[in-house]
Each structure stands twice: as C-alpha cells, then as structure tokens.
Length: 193
Image (cartoon, rainbow, N blue to C red; front, side):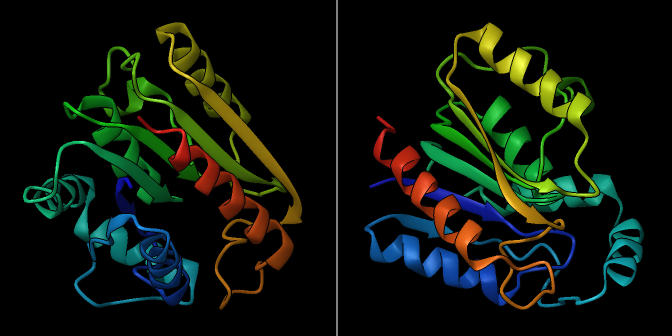
C-alpha cells in the first residue's frame, strides 16, 4: 500500500482522475486528489490556460503545498500535464517522498529550483508518441538528472496522438494506451518500498 497524491492538469479535477484514484484505492492505496481549482473544470485548453494564468504560478504552488500539509510525507507524487510540476516539486524536495509519476509532463530540475534529484525517489514518465506539447529536451534533462542521482528512471511512449490521452472525456483519449499506462503505474507502486 502506498500513499499517493495525484495533481490534475490545467483542465482541473476531471472524471478521469477521480476514476483513476478510485481504481488505485481499490488496489489498497491511500489516494489524495487535491482540487487546486476549487471545483472548476474545463473542456477547452485555451480557457483553462487563461484561468491558470489568472491564478498564477506562485498561487498554484501555494495551493500545492497547502493541499498536502496533512497528508503523510512518505508519499508517491503524481501529476497530469502541468500538475506534473506540483508532483515533481514535491517529489524532489519533500522529505520522505517515495516516487514520482509524471503523465504527459517532465521538466528540468532547474525550472523548479531543485538542485539535485533525491537518490531514493524513482521516476516514471508517460507520453503519447505524438504529443504536440512534448519537449524532448526537457525529458532528456530530467532523465539525466534522475539517473545521475542514482534513482531509477523509466520512460514510456504510447502509440497515440494528442496530449491528455488518458482522459476518457477528451478527443485525445486512447483506451488501450491508458490501460497499459495504468498497468505500468501499478507495477511501479508495487516496487515502492
């Protein structure tokens, strides 16, 4: 059993994340899904990005930190798209972090103010092979930083097109790739000590 925090994408805490959290709970995990938008969700990426910019990165990071203050520190942090920044920040800086799961997300440590990745925090990254927002340079920088620390790093690409391919309510949804992603996540969690 792992403690897991899942941070939503710029579109908010949508049904796909709620369902994924429920599936992980059924496997015996303790799962928290912070709602950093306080109940607001979006279907349109442009509207969502405008809302994110209105809130601002400083406030989003403040909400991130507040959302986990009463949750155990021995936690796996997961994030979808821009929620990956929250997951990566906490996994890279919070004492007791057990792992980092990044869905459609990967940032260089320098963008988050992290000097060195913790050697005991494994990372698993998932992307569609044709994700228009995928930044290979960012992925490579994260991979190098994690591997240099001695931590385990896994990267998976899926034969689909689009960004949020795990969201069943979006046009990019790919069922087979999503099912394989969650199989890999469950294996990752089983290996957490």
